[in-house]
Image 1 (tube, rainbow, N blue to C red):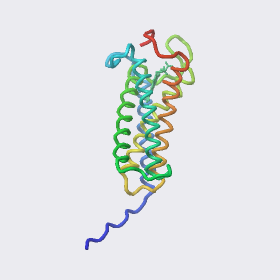
Image 2 (image 1 turned 45 degrees about the vertical axis):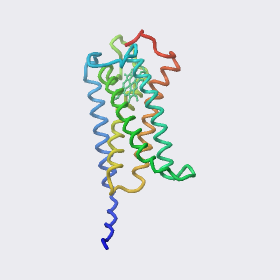
Image 3 (image 1 turned 90 degrees about the vertical axis):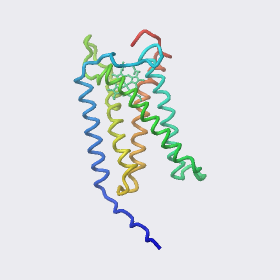
Image 4 (image 1 turned 60 degrees about the horizontal axis):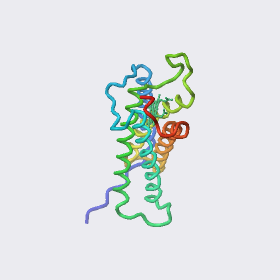
Length: 196
Ligand code: HEM
């Protein structure tokens, strides 16, 4: 009879390397966001009236998918008091990949058309704190994506690494949606065509 493969040795090097790589990715995005000249060229409204309306709508979908991801993860970890159905793992991967694609899509439209706004706007107005926080967290989301992908792929990471990486990504994503789409809907209602 074939012997079972030995359990891989757990190593702290995996999370440490993943966090270092994630920090570099987030930093590079932030630097790009400050040096790139914002332009609406190369953007799409997906049939919405403006880029802003498209981002608000897609971000709401991302927010819902993020909550589904959290619930799915809790269920898979047996925290919802009943066993997870066999299809849940696949569903969790599909909604996770969809949320990631949509997040890349919206973030591209932020970074490319607006950039990482800090300091002062061209008209001399100070950039609101909410906008700065939104942009910085938006960049951090992609650092957290790197950490999460390593956590999912690695068999040598400690057991706490995957739930921590997933929780971090979820928290950042929710904060990014709260500081953008949810803030916007609360302040202005559904976007009109007054702003690109
Ligand atoms: C990659 C890093 C990101 C940067 C640098 C960034 C930057 C910005 C900036 C400067 C604005 C304009 C804010 C204002 O006018 O006050 C904005 C708006 C917006 N962003 Fe982002 N963003 C990023 C990622 C994301 C992500 C990941 C999402 C969605 C999950 C998102 C969703 C939105 C939405 C819906 C708006 C429109 C509402 C608003 O004006 O705040 N952004 N972003």
